[in-house]
Length: 527
Image (cartoon, rainbow, N blue to C red; front, side, top):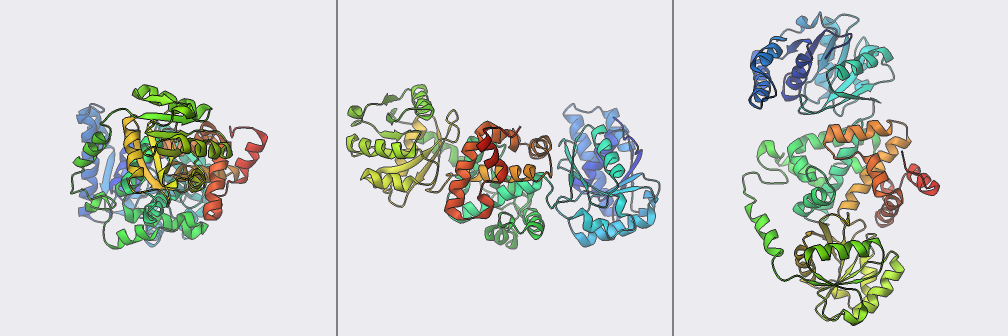
Protein backbone atom coordinates (compact mmCIF):
# COMPACT_ATOMS: atom_id res chain seq x y z
CA UNK A 1 0.00 0.00 0.00
CA UNK A 2 1.04 3.55 -0.59
CA UNK A 3 -0.02 7.06 0.35
CA UNK A 4 0.85 8.36 -3.12
CA UNK A 5 1.84 12.02 -2.78
CA UNK A 6 1.08 12.03 0.96
CA UNK A 7 3.61 10.52 3.39
CA UNK A 8 2.73 12.14 6.70
CA UNK A 9 -0.93 12.53 7.65
CA UNK A 10 -2.53 14.14 10.69
CA UNK A 11 -5.83 13.12 12.29
CA UNK A 12 -7.61 15.56 14.60
CA UNK A 13 -10.05 13.83 16.94
CA UNK A 14 -9.38 10.28 18.13
CA UNK A 15 -12.83 9.03 19.00
CA UNK A 16 -13.95 5.74 17.49
CA UNK A 17 -14.00 7.16 13.97
CA UNK A 18 -10.81 9.24 14.19
CA UNK A 19 -8.85 6.42 15.78
CA UNK A 20 -10.13 4.08 13.07
CA UNK A 21 -8.94 6.46 10.35
CA UNK A 22 -5.54 6.75 12.05
CA UNK A 23 -5.30 2.96 12.14
CA UNK A 24 -6.17 2.67 8.44
CA UNK A 25 -3.47 5.21 7.55
CA UNK A 26 -0.87 3.50 9.74
CA UNK A 27 -1.76 0.10 8.29
CA UNK A 28 -1.03 1.66 4.90
CA UNK A 29 2.53 2.44 5.97
CA UNK A 30 2.03 6.18 6.55
CA UNK A 31 3.37 8.23 9.42
CA UNK A 32 0.41 9.52 11.42
CA UNK A 33 0.08 12.37 13.91
CA UNK A 34 -3.00 11.96 16.10
CA UNK A 35 -4.24 15.05 17.96
CA UNK A 36 -6.71 15.30 20.82
CA UNK A 37 -7.92 18.17 22.99
CA UNK A 38 -6.36 16.99 26.28
CA UNK A 39 -4.43 14.12 27.85
CA UNK A 40 -7.54 12.21 28.96
CA UNK A 41 -8.99 12.26 25.45
CA UNK A 42 -5.59 11.29 24.07
CA UNK A 43 -5.45 8.24 26.33
CA UNK A 44 -8.95 7.23 25.22
CA UNK A 45 -7.75 7.53 21.63
CA UNK A 46 -4.74 5.36 22.41
CA UNK A 47 -7.13 2.84 23.95
CA UNK A 48 -9.25 2.76 20.77
CA UNK A 49 -6.16 2.06 18.68
CA UNK A 50 -4.83 -0.64 20.98
CA UNK A 51 -8.22 -2.33 21.35
CA UNK A 52 -8.96 -2.36 17.62
CA UNK A 53 -5.56 -3.70 16.57
CA UNK A 54 -5.55 -6.11 19.52
CA UNK A 55 -8.87 -7.51 18.35
CA UNK A 56 -7.34 -8.11 14.92
CA UNK A 57 -4.44 -9.98 16.56
CA UNK A 58 -6.84 -12.22 18.50
CA UNK A 59 -8.73 -13.03 15.32
CA UNK A 60 -5.53 -13.94 13.51
CA UNK A 61 -5.79 -11.05 11.05
CA UNK A 62 -2.71 -9.30 12.38
CA UNK A 63 0.51 -10.52 13.98
CA UNK A 64 1.79 -8.99 17.22
CA UNK A 65 4.81 -7.63 15.34
CA UNK A 66 2.54 -6.00 12.77
CA UNK A 67 0.45 -4.48 15.56
CA UNK A 68 3.56 -2.95 17.13
CA UNK A 69 4.61 -1.53 13.76
CA UNK A 70 1.19 0.02 13.19
CA UNK A 71 1.01 1.58 16.65
CA UNK A 72 4.61 2.75 16.26
CA UNK A 73 3.66 4.78 13.19
CA UNK A 74 1.13 6.83 15.17
CA UNK A 75 2.48 9.74 17.20
CA UNK A 76 -0.07 11.03 19.73
CA UNK A 77 -0.11 14.64 20.89
CA UNK A 78 -2.27 17.44 22.26
CA UNK A 79 -0.34 20.09 20.31
CA UNK A 80 -1.73 21.30 16.98
CA UNK A 81 1.74 22.62 16.13
CA UNK A 82 2.89 19.01 15.71
CA UNK A 83 0.81 18.89 12.51
CA UNK A 84 3.09 21.44 10.86
CA UNK A 85 4.98 18.91 8.74
CA UNK A 86 1.89 16.95 7.58
CA UNK A 87 1.01 16.76 3.89
CA UNK A 88 -2.64 16.03 4.70
CA UNK A 89 -4.70 16.53 7.86
CA UNK A 90 -8.07 14.83 8.37
CA UNK A 91 -10.49 16.35 10.89
CA UNK A 92 -12.69 13.80 12.69
CA UNK A 93 -14.27 15.78 15.54
CA UNK A 94 -18.02 15.64 16.42
CA UNK A 95 -20.58 16.85 13.87
CA UNK A 96 -20.84 20.48 14.96
CA UNK A 97 -20.12 23.17 12.40
CA UNK A 98 -18.83 25.64 15.01
CA UNK A 99 -16.40 23.07 16.38
CA UNK A 100 -15.17 22.08 12.91
CA UNK A 101 -14.65 25.71 11.95
CA UNK A 102 -12.58 26.25 15.10
CA UNK A 103 -10.44 23.22 14.24
CA UNK A 104 -9.91 24.37 10.66
CA UNK A 105 -8.96 27.87 11.77
CA UNK A 106 -6.22 26.33 13.91
CA UNK A 107 -5.13 24.01 11.08
CA UNK A 108 -4.98 27.00 8.76
CA UNK A 109 -2.58 28.62 11.20
CA UNK A 110 -0.19 25.70 11.85
CA UNK A 111 -0.17 23.71 8.58
CA UNK A 112 1.99 24.34 5.53
CA UNK A 113 0.43 26.38 2.74
CA UNK A 114 0.56 23.39 0.39
CA UNK A 115 -1.03 20.96 2.86
CA UNK A 116 -4.47 19.56 2.00
CA UNK A 117 -7.04 19.74 4.80
CA UNK A 118 -9.92 17.25 4.87
CA UNK A 119 -13.10 16.87 6.89
CA UNK A 120 -14.65 13.52 7.71
CA UNK A 121 -18.11 15.09 8.05
CA UNK A 122 -20.98 12.78 7.21
CA UNK A 123 -23.66 15.42 6.80
CA UNK A 124 -22.37 19.00 7.07
CA UNK A 125 -21.52 21.20 4.10
CA UNK A 126 -17.87 20.91 3.15
CA UNK A 127 -18.23 24.28 1.43
CA UNK A 128 -19.34 25.93 4.69
CA UNK A 129 -16.20 24.59 6.33
CA UNK A 130 -13.96 25.55 3.39
CA UNK A 131 -15.04 29.21 3.13
CA UNK A 132 -14.05 29.80 6.74
CA UNK A 133 -10.41 29.05 5.91
CA UNK A 134 -7.72 30.91 4.03
CA UNK A 135 -7.24 27.97 1.65
CA UNK A 136 -10.69 26.90 0.35
CA UNK A 137 -9.09 25.40 -2.77
CA UNK A 138 -7.32 22.81 -0.63
CA UNK A 139 -10.31 21.70 1.47
CA UNK A 140 -11.70 18.23 0.65
CA UNK A 141 -14.34 16.02 2.23
CA UNK A 142 -13.17 12.49 2.99
CA UNK A 143 -16.01 10.49 4.54
CA UNK A 144 -14.93 7.15 6.02
CA UNK A 145 -17.58 4.73 7.28
CA UNK A 146 -17.56 3.15 10.72
CA UNK A 147 -15.66 0.96 11.55
CA UNK A 148 -13.04 2.55 9.30
CA UNK A 149 -10.59 -0.40 9.32
CA UNK A 150 -13.34 -2.70 8.02
CA UNK A 151 -15.58 -0.64 5.74
CA UNK A 152 -14.28 -0.33 2.17
CA UNK A 153 -16.12 2.78 1.02
CA UNK A 154 -14.74 6.31 1.33
CA UNK A 155 -16.70 9.21 -0.15
CA UNK A 156 -14.35 11.93 -1.45
CA UNK A 157 -16.15 15.27 -1.69
CA UNK A 158 -15.15 18.16 -3.92
CA UNK A 159 -16.62 21.64 -3.50
CA UNK A 160 -16.87 24.19 -6.31
CA UNK A 161 -13.75 25.78 -4.80
CA UNK A 162 -11.59 22.66 -4.48
CA UNK A 163 -8.60 22.22 -6.78
CA UNK A 164 -9.11 19.08 -8.91
CA UNK A 165 -5.55 18.03 -8.06
CA UNK A 166 -6.32 17.99 -4.33
CA UNK A 167 -9.36 15.76 -4.91
CA UNK A 168 -7.40 13.43 -7.19
CA UNK A 169 -4.56 13.10 -4.66
CA UNK A 170 -6.96 12.24 -1.83
CA UNK A 171 -8.77 9.68 -4.01
CA UNK A 172 -5.37 8.18 -4.93
CA UNK A 173 -4.51 7.94 -1.22
CA UNK A 174 -7.80 6.21 -0.46
CA UNK A 175 -7.25 3.68 -3.23
CA UNK A 176 -3.71 3.07 -2.00
CA UNK A 177 -5.11 2.23 1.42
CA UNK A 178 -7.15 -0.59 -0.09
CA UNK A 179 -10.42 1.33 0.02
CA UNK A 180 -12.86 2.21 -2.76
CA UNK A 181 -13.15 5.97 -3.32
CA UNK A 182 -16.38 7.46 -4.67
CA UNK A 183 -15.85 11.08 -5.73
CA UNK A 184 -18.94 13.31 -5.59
CA UNK A 185 -19.97 16.93 -5.16
CA UNK A 186 -20.85 18.71 -1.93
CA UNK A 187 -24.48 17.72 -1.34
CA UNK A 188 -25.75 17.08 2.20
CA UNK A 189 -25.55 13.37 3.04
CA UNK A 190 -23.46 12.72 -0.08
CA UNK A 191 -24.53 9.40 -1.65
CA UNK A 192 -24.87 6.77 1.06
CA UNK A 193 -26.42 8.82 3.87
CA UNK A 194 -28.74 10.72 1.55
CA UNK A 195 -30.17 7.43 0.28
CA UNK A 196 -30.04 5.56 3.58
CA UNK A 197 -31.63 8.14 5.86
CA UNK A 198 -34.63 8.85 3.62
CA UNK A 199 -35.46 5.14 3.91
CA UNK A 200 -34.83 5.02 7.66
CA UNK A 201 -36.97 8.09 8.27
CA UNK A 202 -39.80 6.64 6.19
CA UNK A 203 -39.68 3.48 8.30
CA UNK A 204 -40.03 5.58 11.47
CA UNK A 205 -43.03 7.37 9.94
CA UNK A 206 -44.53 4.03 8.92
CA UNK A 207 -44.30 2.83 12.52
CA UNK A 208 -45.67 6.10 13.88
CA UNK A 209 -48.71 5.93 11.59
CA UNK A 210 -49.59 2.45 12.82
CA UNK A 211 -49.10 0.90 9.38
CA UNK A 212 -47.09 -1.99 10.86
CA UNK A 213 -45.24 -2.88 14.04
CA UNK A 214 -41.55 -2.33 14.70
CA UNK A 215 -40.82 -6.06 14.62
CA UNK A 216 -42.81 -6.69 11.45
CA UNK A 217 -41.09 -3.83 9.61
CA UNK A 218 -37.64 -5.03 10.67
CA UNK A 219 -38.51 -8.62 9.73
CA UNK A 220 -39.96 -7.56 6.39
CA UNK A 221 -36.81 -5.71 5.36
CA UNK A 222 -34.42 -8.48 6.37
CA UNK A 223 -36.42 -11.53 5.25
CA UNK A 224 -38.20 -9.92 2.30
CA UNK A 225 -35.88 -7.05 1.40
CA UNK A 226 -32.62 -8.98 1.85
CA UNK A 227 -31.01 -6.28 4.02
CA UNK A 228 -28.43 -7.11 6.70
CA UNK A 229 -30.61 -5.57 9.43
CA UNK A 230 -33.97 -3.90 9.77
CA UNK A 231 -34.34 -0.11 9.87
CA UNK A 232 -35.03 0.12 13.63
CA UNK A 233 -32.17 -2.17 14.56
CA UNK A 234 -29.91 -0.06 12.33
CA UNK A 235 -31.10 3.28 13.72
CA UNK A 236 -30.52 2.04 17.27
CA UNK A 237 -27.01 0.99 16.24
CA UNK A 238 -26.25 4.34 14.58
CA UNK A 239 -27.74 6.32 17.47
CA UNK A 240 -31.08 8.10 17.17
CA UNK A 241 -29.51 11.46 17.95
CA UNK A 242 -27.10 10.97 15.06
CA UNK A 243 -30.04 9.99 12.82
CA UNK A 244 -31.83 13.24 13.64
CA UNK A 245 -28.66 15.29 13.09
CA UNK A 246 -28.08 13.79 9.66
CA UNK A 247 -31.74 14.17 8.66
CA UNK A 248 -31.76 17.80 9.81
CA UNK A 249 -28.66 18.56 7.76
CA UNK A 250 -30.10 16.98 4.61
CA UNK A 251 -33.53 18.58 5.11
CA UNK A 252 -31.99 22.02 5.62
CA UNK A 253 -30.54 21.76 2.12
CA UNK A 254 -33.21 19.81 0.25
CA UNK A 255 -36.49 20.73 1.98
CA UNK A 256 -37.61 17.27 0.94
CA UNK A 257 -40.11 15.92 3.46
CA UNK A 258 -38.56 12.46 3.19
CA UNK A 259 -35.72 13.95 5.24
CA UNK A 260 -37.85 15.86 7.76
CA UNK A 261 -37.14 13.80 10.89
CA UNK A 262 -40.27 12.01 12.08
CA UNK A 263 -41.83 13.30 15.34
CA UNK A 264 -41.34 9.83 16.83
CA UNK A 265 -37.58 10.03 16.26
CA UNK A 266 -37.42 13.47 17.87
CA UNK A 267 -39.50 12.32 20.82
CA UNK A 268 -37.16 9.40 21.53
CA UNK A 269 -34.12 11.68 21.30
CA UNK A 270 -35.68 14.26 23.61
CA UNK A 271 -36.38 11.47 26.10
CA UNK A 272 -32.72 10.42 25.98
CA UNK A 273 -33.57 7.07 24.39
CA UNK A 274 -30.81 7.03 21.80
CA UNK A 275 -30.46 3.35 20.97
CA UNK A 276 -27.82 0.85 21.96
CA UNK A 277 -25.54 3.43 23.56
CA UNK A 278 -28.21 4.29 26.16
CA UNK A 279 -29.66 0.80 26.46
CA UNK A 280 -32.97 1.74 24.88
CA UNK A 281 -34.21 3.29 21.66
CA UNK A 282 -36.71 1.61 19.39
CA UNK A 283 -35.74 -1.57 21.24
CA UNK A 284 -35.12 -2.09 24.96
CA UNK A 285 -31.70 -3.74 25.22
CA UNK A 286 -32.17 -4.70 28.85
CA UNK A 287 -34.97 -7.06 27.94
CA UNK A 288 -34.73 -10.52 26.44
CA UNK A 289 -36.49 -11.21 23.16
CA UNK A 290 -36.56 -14.96 23.79
CA UNK A 291 -40.30 -15.35 23.32
CA UNK A 292 -40.47 -14.12 19.75
CA UNK A 293 -39.00 -17.19 18.06
CA UNK A 294 -41.15 -19.52 20.16
CA UNK A 295 -44.29 -17.74 18.96
CA UNK A 296 -43.16 -17.95 15.35
CA UNK A 297 -42.38 -21.65 15.70
CA UNK A 298 -45.75 -22.45 17.27
CA UNK A 299 -47.56 -20.63 14.45
CA UNK A 300 -45.97 -23.04 11.98
CA UNK A 301 -47.38 -26.08 13.80
CA UNK A 302 -50.56 -27.82 12.72
CA UNK A 303 -51.85 -29.65 9.66
CA UNK A 304 -50.85 -28.55 6.21
CA UNK A 305 -53.48 -26.24 4.73
CA UNK A 306 -55.52 -26.78 1.60
CA UNK A 307 -54.91 -23.90 -0.77
CA UNK A 308 -56.99 -22.83 -3.73
CA UNK A 309 -55.32 -20.78 -6.47
CA UNK A 310 -57.37 -18.86 -9.00
CA UNK A 311 -55.58 -17.26 -11.92
CA UNK A 312 -52.65 -18.22 -14.13
CA UNK A 313 -49.21 -16.81 -14.65
CA UNK A 314 -45.81 -16.64 -12.91
CA UNK A 315 -47.24 -15.66 -9.51
CA UNK A 316 -49.81 -18.46 -9.56
CA UNK A 317 -47.03 -20.91 -10.50
CA UNK A 318 -44.79 -19.59 -7.68
CA UNK A 319 -47.54 -19.99 -5.07
CA UNK A 320 -48.29 -23.50 -6.30
CA UNK A 321 -44.59 -24.36 -6.07
CA UNK A 322 -44.25 -23.13 -2.50
CA UNK A 323 -47.37 -25.11 -1.53
CA UNK A 324 -45.84 -28.20 -3.11
CA UNK A 325 -42.60 -27.66 -1.15
CA UNK A 326 -44.60 -27.37 2.06
CA UNK A 327 -46.59 -30.54 1.31
CA UNK A 328 -49.87 -28.62 1.09
CA UNK A 329 -52.73 -29.65 -1.19
CA UNK A 330 -53.37 -27.25 -4.07
CA UNK A 331 -56.71 -26.87 -5.81
CA UNK A 332 -57.11 -24.76 -8.93
CA UNK A 333 -60.67 -25.56 -9.99
CA UNK A 334 -63.70 -23.52 -8.80
CA UNK A 335 -65.64 -26.78 -8.21
CA UNK A 336 -62.98 -27.87 -5.68
CA UNK A 337 -62.71 -24.73 -3.55
CA UNK A 338 -65.31 -25.69 -0.95
CA UNK A 339 -62.80 -27.36 1.39
CA UNK A 340 -59.97 -24.82 1.10
CA UNK A 341 -58.46 -23.05 4.10
CA UNK A 342 -57.07 -20.31 1.85
CA UNK A 343 -58.10 -19.15 -1.61
CA UNK A 344 -55.55 -16.94 -3.38
CA UNK A 345 -56.29 -14.70 -6.34
CA UNK A 346 -53.12 -14.71 -8.42
CA UNK A 347 -54.21 -13.14 -11.68
CA UNK A 348 -51.82 -10.93 -13.63
CA UNK A 349 -54.52 -8.32 -14.28
CA UNK A 350 -56.37 -6.59 -11.41
CA UNK A 351 -59.72 -6.52 -13.25
CA UNK A 352 -59.49 -10.21 -14.08
CA UNK A 353 -58.43 -10.92 -10.50
CA UNK A 354 -61.50 -9.13 -9.15
CA UNK A 355 -63.80 -11.29 -11.30
CA UNK A 356 -61.97 -14.51 -10.41
CA UNK A 357 -62.00 -13.83 -6.66
CA UNK A 358 -65.68 -12.86 -6.72
CA UNK A 359 -66.50 -16.18 -8.37
CA UNK A 360 -64.22 -18.07 -5.97
CA UNK A 361 -65.90 -16.40 -2.98
CA UNK A 362 -69.17 -18.01 -3.97
CA UNK A 363 -67.59 -21.46 -4.21
CA UNK A 364 -65.33 -21.33 -1.13
CA UNK A 365 -66.50 -22.51 2.26
CA UNK A 366 -67.57 -20.05 4.96
CA UNK A 367 -64.34 -20.52 6.92
CA UNK A 368 -61.98 -19.91 4.00
CA UNK A 369 -59.64 -16.92 4.01
CA UNK A 370 -59.71 -15.09 0.68
CA UNK A 371 -56.46 -13.41 -0.37
CA UNK A 372 -55.81 -10.64 -2.89
CA UNK A 373 -52.27 -10.45 -4.27
CA UNK A 374 -52.46 -6.90 -5.67
CA UNK A 375 -49.70 -4.68 -4.22
CA UNK A 376 -51.20 -1.34 -5.30
CA UNK A 377 -53.23 -0.64 -2.18
CA UNK A 378 -56.57 -1.67 -3.69
CA UNK A 379 -57.28 -4.68 -1.50
CA UNK A 380 -60.42 -3.07 -0.09
CA UNK A 381 -61.88 -2.60 -3.59
CA UNK A 382 -61.25 -6.25 -4.41
CA UNK A 383 -62.68 -7.27 -1.05
CA UNK A 384 -65.91 -5.36 -1.50
CA UNK A 385 -66.44 -6.93 -4.92
CA UNK A 386 -66.45 -10.44 -3.41
CA UNK A 387 -69.62 -9.94 -1.39
CA UNK A 388 -67.81 -11.27 1.70
CA UNK A 389 -65.18 -8.60 2.51
CA UNK A 390 -64.85 -9.73 6.12
CA UNK A 391 -62.99 -12.82 4.88
CA UNK A 392 -60.53 -10.95 2.63
CA UNK A 393 -56.92 -10.00 3.29
CA UNK A 394 -54.10 -8.81 1.07
CA UNK A 395 -51.31 -11.34 0.54
CA UNK A 396 -48.08 -10.06 -0.98
CA UNK A 397 -44.90 -11.99 -1.67
CA UNK A 398 -42.21 -9.34 -2.35
CA UNK A 399 -40.09 -12.10 -3.82
CA UNK A 400 -42.24 -15.03 -5.01
CA UNK A 401 -39.22 -17.30 -4.60
CA UNK A 402 -38.52 -15.96 -1.09
CA UNK A 403 -40.02 -16.72 2.31
CA UNK A 404 -41.75 -13.48 3.35
CA UNK A 405 -45.54 -13.16 3.25
CA UNK A 406 -47.03 -9.70 3.89
CA UNK A 407 -50.62 -9.85 5.10
CA UNK A 408 -52.76 -6.73 4.96
CA UNK A 409 -56.05 -6.38 6.82
CA UNK A 410 -58.57 -3.90 5.45
CA UNK A 411 -61.09 -1.92 7.50
CA UNK A 412 -63.64 -4.57 6.53
CA UNK A 413 -61.57 -7.62 7.51
CA UNK A 414 -63.15 -9.45 10.41
CA UNK A 415 -61.20 -9.89 13.68
CA UNK A 416 -59.07 -13.00 13.63
CA UNK A 417 -59.02 -13.40 9.86
CA UNK A 418 -55.54 -11.86 9.46
CA UNK A 419 -54.33 -14.10 12.29
CA UNK A 420 -55.67 -17.16 10.48
CA UNK A 421 -54.00 -16.00 7.27
CA UNK A 422 -50.69 -15.57 9.12
CA UNK A 423 -51.01 -19.06 10.62
CA UNK A 424 -51.66 -20.58 7.19
CA UNK A 425 -48.66 -18.73 5.75
CA UNK A 426 -46.46 -20.04 8.56
CA UNK A 427 -47.63 -23.60 7.92
CA UNK A 428 -46.58 -23.10 4.30
CA UNK A 429 -43.03 -22.36 5.50
CA UNK A 430 -43.36 -18.59 5.07
CA UNK A 431 -42.51 -15.81 7.53
CA UNK A 432 -45.68 -13.72 7.93
CA UNK A 433 -45.75 -10.01 8.76
CA UNK A 434 -48.84 -7.81 9.12
CA UNK A 435 -49.67 -4.34 7.86
CA UNK A 436 -52.59 -2.16 6.89
CA UNK A 437 -54.07 -2.03 3.40
CA UNK A 438 -51.75 0.51 1.83
CA UNK A 439 -49.88 0.63 -1.47
CA UNK A 440 -46.67 -1.38 -1.43
CA UNK A 441 -47.48 -3.17 1.85
CA UNK A 442 -44.15 -2.89 3.78
CA UNK A 443 -41.22 -3.96 1.63
CA UNK A 444 -42.18 -2.26 -1.62
CA UNK A 445 -43.45 0.84 0.19
CA UNK A 446 -39.99 1.30 1.73
CA UNK A 447 -37.84 -0.15 -1.03
CA UNK A 448 -39.09 1.64 -4.13
CA UNK A 449 -38.95 5.22 -2.79
CA UNK A 450 -35.31 4.55 -1.82
CA UNK A 451 -34.66 3.20 -5.32
CA UNK A 452 -36.44 6.23 -6.76
CA UNK A 453 -34.09 8.49 -4.79
CA UNK A 454 -31.13 6.63 -6.29
CA UNK A 455 -32.56 7.00 -9.80
CA UNK A 456 -33.00 10.74 -9.16
CA UNK A 457 -29.36 10.97 -8.11
CA UNK A 458 -28.30 9.14 -11.27
CA UNK A 459 -30.57 11.26 -13.47
CA UNK A 460 -29.17 14.47 -12.00
CA UNK A 461 -25.63 13.38 -12.85
CA UNK A 462 -24.53 13.64 -9.21
CA UNK A 463 -22.95 10.16 -9.30
CA UNK A 464 -22.76 7.37 -11.83
CA UNK A 465 -24.41 3.97 -11.45
CA UNK A 466 -21.26 2.22 -10.25
CA UNK A 467 -20.58 4.87 -7.60
CA UNK A 468 -24.16 4.79 -6.31
CA UNK A 469 -24.15 1.00 -6.10
CA UNK A 470 -20.71 0.97 -4.45
CA UNK A 471 -21.87 3.50 -1.86
CA UNK A 472 -24.70 1.26 -0.69
CA UNK A 473 -22.91 -2.09 -0.90
CA UNK A 474 -19.56 -1.00 0.54
CA UNK A 475 -20.80 1.80 2.80
CA UNK A 476 -24.05 0.32 4.12
CA UNK A 477 -23.51 -3.42 3.68
CA UNK A 478 -26.40 -3.86 1.24
CA UNK A 479 -26.18 -7.09 -0.80
CA UNK A 480 -26.80 -5.19 -4.05
CA UNK A 481 -26.80 -1.54 -5.02
CA UNK A 482 -29.98 0.38 -5.88
CA UNK A 483 -29.32 0.75 -9.61
CA UNK A 484 -28.66 -2.98 -9.92
CA UNK A 485 -31.78 -3.60 -7.80
CA UNK A 486 -33.94 -1.50 -10.12
CA UNK A 487 -32.83 -3.52 -13.13
CA UNK A 488 -33.28 -6.78 -11.20
CA UNK A 489 -36.76 -5.99 -9.87
CA UNK A 490 -37.95 -4.36 -13.10
CA UNK A 491 -38.34 -0.69 -13.91
CA UNK A 492 -41.97 -1.22 -14.89
CA UNK A 493 -42.70 -2.69 -11.47
CA UNK A 494 -40.89 0.21 -9.79
CA UNK A 495 -42.91 2.78 -11.73
CA UNK A 496 -46.20 0.96 -11.01
CA UNK A 497 -45.57 0.83 -7.25
CA UNK A 498 -44.33 4.42 -7.11
CA UNK A 499 -47.39 5.65 -9.01
CA UNK A 500 -49.62 3.81 -6.55
CA UNK A 501 -47.75 5.30 -3.59
CA UNK A 502 -47.95 8.78 -5.11
CA UNK A 503 -51.66 8.42 -5.90
CA UNK A 504 -52.32 7.36 -2.33
CA UNK A 505 -50.19 9.99 -0.53
CA UNK A 506 -49.70 12.81 -3.09
CA UNK A 507 -46.14 13.10 -1.81
CA UNK A 508 -44.08 14.62 -4.65
CA UNK A 509 -40.99 12.59 -3.69
CA UNK A 510 -42.90 9.35 -4.34
CA UNK A 511 -43.69 10.11 -7.98
CA UNK A 512 -41.40 8.08 -10.27
CA UNK A 513 -38.54 10.25 -11.48
CA UNK A 514 -38.31 11.04 -15.21
CA UNK A 515 -35.30 8.75 -15.71
CA UNK A 516 -37.41 5.73 -14.69
CA UNK A 517 -40.45 6.55 -16.80
CA UNK A 518 -38.21 7.33 -19.77
CA UNK A 519 -36.42 3.99 -19.56
CA UNK A 520 -39.70 2.12 -19.13
CA UNK A 521 -41.08 3.79 -22.25
CA UNK A 522 -37.91 2.87 -24.12
CA UNK A 523 -37.90 -0.68 -22.77
CA UNK A 524 -34.32 -0.27 -21.61
CA UNK A 525 -32.63 -1.07 -18.27
CA UNK A 526 -30.69 1.65 -16.46
CA UNK A 527 -27.34 0.03 -17.23
